[in-house]
Length: 329
Image (cartoon, rainbow, N blue to C red; front, side, top):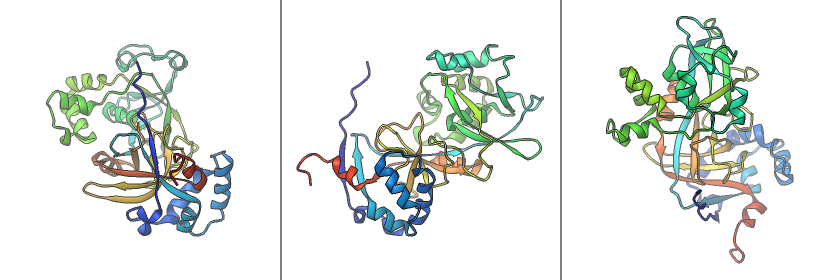
């Protein structure tokens, strides 16, 4: 039985109630907003986007046409980070490149859930079907490519093949970090993507079994139309931007919306970002995943992020005040 959704409350704030608002680069946020706002088809958003294309002062634009809204579903805020992995691979199988990056088989779209990760990798169900987009040299990095949902594969000639999320097998994602904590291998504060990778590599047999603990399996598609110097495609099918794009739960936050991030922790972050992506683990009104960019350095930074704070959604003024109960103004 599906649990009842928590009651959601809304609070409209003023911009001077946002910590650090005046110090941000609002023009940078405006540029990112322009990248996807044209895909928001509602009349009020369309009007805002038309105005945005002519705007020259980002702060004035957001303050004139939006109001910050605090959406509370009863759960604490949690900020994590994600990135675009970069793997070494080939378009053909070789002795080095022998781990396939699969396209989605047709039956996996029709049967929900389809086969588990173990079934897919331990049987010949995928063999001889031409579903291999590429081959990579590291099964652990391939596993984490699936968690991120998109990435770049560096080919032997120095060029890149970019792959994006195509679909999944329908099984619920299970955290390897949580499983290692359950086994008393690590304490919660010790777990990161790099720690998990190192443990799997040090323990190849147990590590293979640990990867099977997550029955979810992600399939990919080639997205070579996106230039290598641009960010990967987000859920809005547009390139996302390092440290200005964020993944949210679209059942609470409209994709394309500006969001004000107040992330606490060791390295506080106060920044206006644009909600241009989603993720299977991003659930809740105050849950957000910050995009850190491409490659290992971005991956290390993203893997360390797990901090509290608060997130406010910038909504068109009329939409913002329409959310308030009668008599609240």
